[in-house]
Length: 570
Ligand code: G16
Image 1: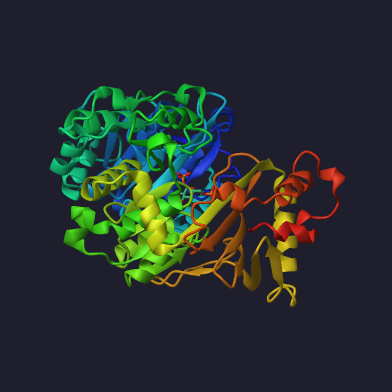
Image 2: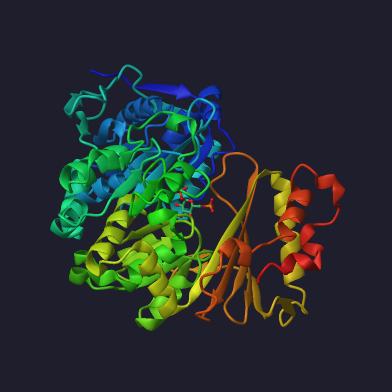
């Protein structure tokens, strides 16, 4: 018989889940007494007691430092709170999309994912705990608010301190927990259910031909020592026949090899330089927990994530899943470029614009309104699960390559010729003082709401932009009518070009200001410009840094007071 202890604890005030779960430095979880215990108890307390005994929770993580300790705590606290069954990936490993898949497959009441996504790991890095609901998607705001409220007033947690689970042993372990009926822990293969799901979505025979047939292409998939490694090896190499050498950095590591597991041009620089050599036709990188992806073509041709989802949308019939389900609608997060809108318009599909955060797509999918969606932050996915899905995106692109028999670059250029191009760039100002960042957003909002602002024109090069609308994005969910306010400041010009400012919800220290620029071009002579040059926010960028970075005292006014800060397009 396993005993339950009731432990008195002191509440913390900072356990508010961000865009996707609670993310903090590892030392915050490690050094603050009961910090992890409190949050895990708060998550489980948010699950109705009546749903616990017959319910299962899926648990998995991206392999980062502190994950195994957190899983043992989840086991002990779940048992003590009457959860009937836990399903855990072997050695704790399970990608975020795979957790979503398993929650849906076994009809679990939810899942807990241990990840800080693309943030660095190791003892000095970040850790995160995220709760997903029975649909397989991240908990919506109503539930994360409830968890936060509980965490602010928690006085005790329940735990079975003697209960230890061997995470390496596949199979079911059963425990007799005091008060409750047997508590079972099932350790499952991390890849099996997810691979089975992908077989039902894609034409594996066509992909096998593409990756290992007589006219095969050469791919390089870089897991950045995150959780996707075992998935790439098993699905892409073992099953689809790509050589073992195409799987790079595929051993999950607690510190991601000392790097940021962030699939973008900065942090996946090794992949970019390997691709430049011309040996590979297709390259991709994934983040720590496997939900983000970056796609590259031969010689390192970069596919912007906002374009990536648009290309998948325009070629959606290359994917058997959508031939069966039809296309119910498309969606993008607000800051994501309007490339997908152009596809939706041309193909007469419904397009939804949601706030940043994958959780906002879930309601639309559950209501049968949404099939394909994407975000500028390297997230792409569909209603096959309720998380973005890095490997799914790669197989989607490979399906398009197989069907069109063209290179990535040619597919992208054809797309721009047909739909026009949205030049998209994003600038991040990280770890700035949180109060100063909030003040900057407030000051900017005040200026944007000035009665003379709408209608003003700004000229850059041969282009003139007129402000058509300026607002703080507010979203009313079309399904449950819930309202999410203050989702980012938008300056929208009459040709659809946009400048957006918002504060990130995924940082672990201070604040991160994001500046997004999306400018549309349909002149075929101009669609091949470099977006970094076209959307250069200099000198705006420098002024933001001067104001809100280390040199703040040099500039007393918010930088947005300087009129040239708005001259960022062109
Ligand atoms: C999370 C969310 C995404 C969001 C991203 C960036 O991704 O799931 O929907 O776009 O954060 O959010 P922010 O701009 O607030 O930092 P992930 O991969 O970090 O879990």
